[in-house]
Image (cartoon, rainbow, N blue to C red; front, side):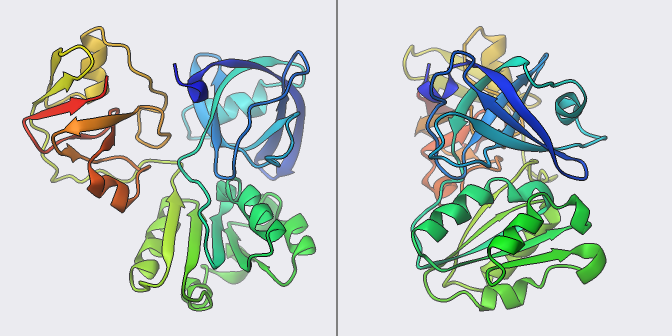
Length: 317
């Protein structure tokens, strides 16, 4: 099993309100050992009863004594956030996996960070990192109301010339064009937040070839209603076994049906746990993790959602 998928026991040593509807949870090794190393953009899995959910790390990567996540209560969600808010208590010991990172911070001449609501969490370690390196950066941070925006006051107070906090009820929608026009050649845009914000940023950056865009989604992209879903075969390179994937099931489901052990977590194509290498064939990428360039390379796929454009895929399992 890969190191970033090994389960670990962690104790809850802190739980604080970070904003209306948001709690920050701090975890530490129950035996006092170091926590796993991680880099900005990483997330961990929290095992919450019979559920596993992914949350971005928002603490300091140099802190080897604790890990911190911030969780937004989603009343209409699948139950993970409600468990954290209502049941998880200081002193509880839970299981985590990771950290894993599908949203790594790349080198750039300057940075624009765009956060929507709880999307601020993976960006916090990034802006701390670039600030420590003396690289120019700005943060455009939107949310429904000021009181719902976790860490907003501290960020604005610490960096008044770099942080623009824009609650929607006070300021309306974010002015993306002005923010993007202020980013020069070689600039990188990192964005995390709700899907309408991500789509707007993708559209705005599409007209600015001099910028590099990186996004992280907490929910899967909308499926293409016209996408074909024919059956196909998956060959497992390590054993030579061939599994037929039906038109109404995922590669992961077909492997499970055939008794093949494969790593997975979210089943939505958002966390990256189920990524496998593709050795032959052309995947039909339907994930929300890989960049357009990574998808175009056709050398990896998320088996929980992606399918195949060719009659057979050969994967490294």
